[in-house]
Structure formats: structure tokens, C-alpha cells
Image (cartoon, rainbow, N blue to C red; front, side, top):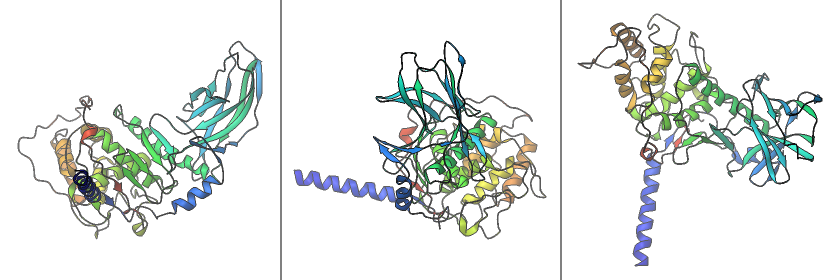
Length: 431
């Protein structure tokens, strides 16, 4: 009996392995493979492990201003900033600031839109306390491949204080490996901001685990985890985040398998890859740019252009590059000789999020219901420019021009159970 049970377990394990392999997307183009072990060793050498958190020294940008006039409710305050790859400082919005004591977290707060933060310590606290910064928030958490979090040690404060104590401006040292995780946070903020800019309800968003450094960039639906290899590669990183967004914000078939950005494969896989790339474009690129293109995506064909797809790229809606560019041409405001501005990104996104469909054709069928006759003709021209041609579907009800009927997301019960345990690997984007 035990032998039979062992055989059944072995067979199930083999079946799981086969299904897993079949649903894995290999993208050998997306971004160069990197040695995760070497990167991890460099990061480890810069800090120390305390429990399940790697601690690194934060960087003081200004001198503390000290205490101000006496007040009945004194605050410990300051600003937390992050520098981008061009060494420009930005507020570390959504980051956490924690007041730490011997027993752990005493109090914590979230960094505001301008980078400012403030903590009101209890009057009974006495002695030396430390401030700690973390980029983990309600939308994403950042960890290494061992599952350990990242945090940075800020200034120490002696309590009690009589007046507000300004610790000054602090940041992560981006000249060090650990500080470059700030690039990921800033890229993800861009993606989050794009949803706000286009008025998209994201109450469906689930906190996504973000693993860095890893040797490959990929998304694992079973763990709802994004794995990243290059913190500077904003386009690759938002694309991977886009996979998690599609997994939770849409009801679409999961797709996996070997693919490259200039080849054709299944329509579902082309959508699974093309739409996250479109989200990266919306987050970072200018809709009016006549030569909109990515920076790090697919080194062997860089730069990957959104506005102008090379003629040697496989044609039709079975290609992810064509899908990305078709969506872009529908919403971009740069009118060239072949396509004109059709509708806003807001209308396109609202037509798709929360819906059930399959592939670019399914997305088009949803979108065309929102278009009047003139918009439909313009949209079809944009599709044709990207070698995607769909026949008219009889009986499609057209909206009147300018109709912006409010959208609300559906009931999400059971949605996650429908997502398979596929691992969407971006070997395609790696060379």
C-alpha cells in the first residue's frame, strides 16, 4: 500500500512538473542575465542580518536641525528621498519610517507625497531610540531570494524631547548595491501613478512580493511574486509588475512557453506579454512622442520602439510587440500618416480591467463596444498599421461619441483560484 501511495505521489509530481514547464514563458531577450549570487554577496557585505531583515546604513543628506520650541505634542520628523538613475532626488512615497526600541517597533508612519514623515513618540519613552526606513508598503514588499526584507538605519534620537526634533533629509546610498533597490521603488511608483492619472480603480490590487536580486526577470503567479535582475531597468521591471497586475486585475487565460519579442506564438501568450509592456509604456513614456521607445528592453533589438515596429517582426495578434504597439497607437496623441488619436488611455483601460476575455481579439471585442462609428474606424486603422485585422462583428452596439459611462469592477470571489501556478519567465527579454 505504501509503495502504491509513493508511486501515485511520484506520478503527481511528474505531472505537476510537466504542467509547470508547459506554462513557463521563456524570454531570452528581456534583460541580460546577471549573477544573483555575486550581487547578493555584494549586498550582504554592505549590511548585517537582524532576524529576517538585512539592515544597511541610510545616507544623511542634511544635518539634523534638532529640537524646536517646546510643544505639548512634540514630533520626530524628517524627509526620505530616493535618487533615480540620473541622480535626481524624488520623495520616497509610501515608504515606512519606524521608531525602533530594544523590543522592536515602537511606532511607525508612512512617508507622504513630498517625502515628509513625522512620528509622535509617547511621553513615557526614555533613552536612545533608532529610526529605521523600509520601502515595503501596501502595494509591494521587497525581499532577497532568501526571503529576507531590506531596511535602512537612520539617525538615533534620545527621548523624551520637549519640542519637534527635525532629523533632516535622508536617502539610500545609490552608489552601493543595497541602495539601488530604490530604483525599483521609483519605477513601481510610476506604474501606480499611471493608474491614478488615468482614473483607474485599483481596489483589486494585491500586495506583490518583489524579489531582488535574481538572475532572471520573471513573474510567479503561484506566489504572486515578481523576480527582478536589474534595478535600473525600469521598462523590464514595470513589465514584470504588469504581469501581477494582469493576474489580479483581469480575468484572462494564463499563458506560458518559449517566446521572443519578434516571433509569433499563441494569441494568449502574445497578450500576456504585450499588455504588461503597454503598461510600462503608459507609466513612463510620453504619449505624444513620435519615436516612443524603451531603454533596457530586449538588448539584441534595442531600442524597442513602440511607435514604429520594424517590418521584420512577425505580423498579427500572435506577436507581443504588435499587441503593445496596437494598444499604444489607439491611445497615443502623436498623429502620424497612418493612425490618429482614437480614445483616451482611461477609456481603454476601463474597458478591459475587471473583464473576462482572451487575447488581443477578446480585448478588441470589449473595446469596440465602447466606440462610436468614427472611433471604431480610427481604432481599426491603428490595428491595421500594426498588421492586426479583425472583421466587423455583426450586431455590435455603438456608443454615442463622448459617452463616458462610469465603470465599476466586478465581484472578485474565486478569481485567484482560476489563476494557474504558471511561472512567466522573461528569458525572452534576456540575452
